[in-house]
Amino acid sequence: MIQLHNVSMSYQAESPALNDVNLKIPKGDFVFLTGPSGAGKSTLLKLLYAELTPTRGQVLIDGVNLSRLPRSQIPFLRRSIGVVFQDYKLLPNRTVLENVAITLEVLGWGKRDIGKKVFHILKQMGLEEKINATPLRLSGGEQQRVALARALVNDPKILIADEPTGNLDDDNKEQILSVFKEANIRGTTVVVATHDKRVIVNSHRRVIRLEKGRLLEVSDVQG
Image (tube, rainbow, N blue to C red; front, side, top):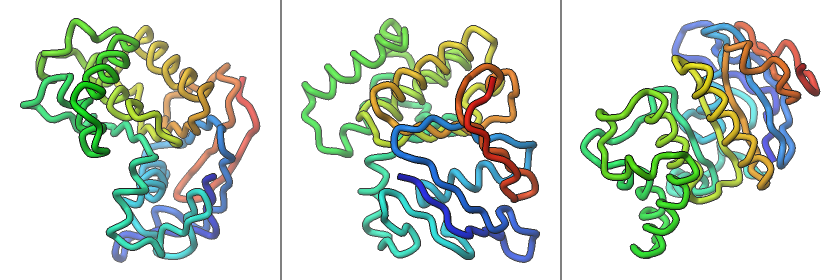
């Protein structure tokens, strides 16, 4: 499903953020992308949802070369990819319901169906009582769950998360990871970038390690 062939990515004259990365992530896999800050994790994720174009090499999603994808087609690609950003990117003046509903509105869902689907996923996240709250009235853990609900509400083929457990307590971390696992069981390919070793230990998931832009290690399972 996800393939990187000799991918390098440089920002202007700086040293490469990614350097000759080759990687395959099969459909239905669940992988952790790890490494220290500045290793290239966020850059790799941005390549997967076409926020960036590689300086060299190819990034393929379902056999489609993203470098050759017309800009007009990128929104259609992203309809099958759910993204949980490190800073959440919630709209501060919209309610929890409105933040999650945006994904389905873009897809052209009807208002009644949107309401049912959004309430269902917010209930799964334990947020049904926060449905009319704005993000600034939520805790960090609650904001993260709203961002995750928005990413998952349309049952994407791929879920990408950038440091989704950063600054969360252990209980919230476990809850977030449980949602990832449930999505993966339903068939979603999950890619989680994290430098938190405690999240990875005993996860029994494939681990991909980056350091200074190079892929150093790919292990089948961890723990």
